[in-house]
Image: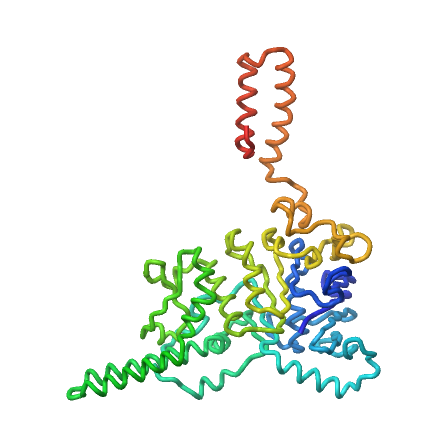
Length: 455
């Protein structure tokens, strides 16, 4: 599933805005929905509202939590165009419900398509997409909210595991997300609980008086055989995904199958490179951010989902920001990502046509889209490509930041200009060696140093 177009009329701060979410002319994917979208804009321009609207439309259900309920005001309308497999359709809001406005097959006249047959095809296609949507809000629930505080039996409860059926909507905005994480970590919970059960059997056999060594060896052999046939999913995640990413933090995944980790439902535990435990309470917010966003993508392997991330840069140092977008994209190829951000480092990961900038009209205070191309929407008509710009140039040209720095920097630049003119006059009078001239030169050099310039 991918979104090709969003049109908003009289919705919150949007008077009438149409967002074209397809590749421009001249691109090899001309007309196809974008694989990733970067939404930027001033605070209050509706970036988060757009993400919530997308969640509402993709789920085709307005009952997605009181904190994200988005009724459109009377007279307002939101249209969203979707492509699913070889089908396309448009949804619009009718009060608090969503209805079809158009439908059909790609490159086919919609009037030639029976709605009943088309809807059957659509529902069949949607049922094959699991998950259909993953939503990461700005504030992710941390720590015990992930898997609960209660201990569990080391024995596998097969009935409970069977109830953890695939979920099409994975939404981390809800306060109670325990079942969601249980589903994501299902294979880890099952593997660790079974491993502890078999290890407990061996330990019990050893403790029992009179137990012969042969039986203990047989049970140990069964355990070793089971391990060889059932690779530890935590080790797989560590080797293929997490360890390379958190290596820069001096951390790695703890692979020890301990009673403690299993009784806490088997969430990922971290240790330092020299093997010291790092309790969850001492994880940095950046570490939580990485672990909580990467594990679901790796575990669920979304192939055709819509994935929403509000402020992916939160709590991440700039060096991570420059690489994290590619990490996410590689974990879910074929999905469509929407990122809302304030970070020039995040914006530098996108092609110019993938950047949607929202701005306030100073007179009306309504929001409009600031187009970064002139003339027709063609790859050759875009003014700037954030992938080739310096961070400060991105802030000035993409984010429209007029100031070059803080007030102190601007003041220093003005003072430097004045000093330069004064020094030239003193130089013309051959008075640079005077006390006044030396003070001017020293002040000039001090300002250069503070501004980070070479002298």
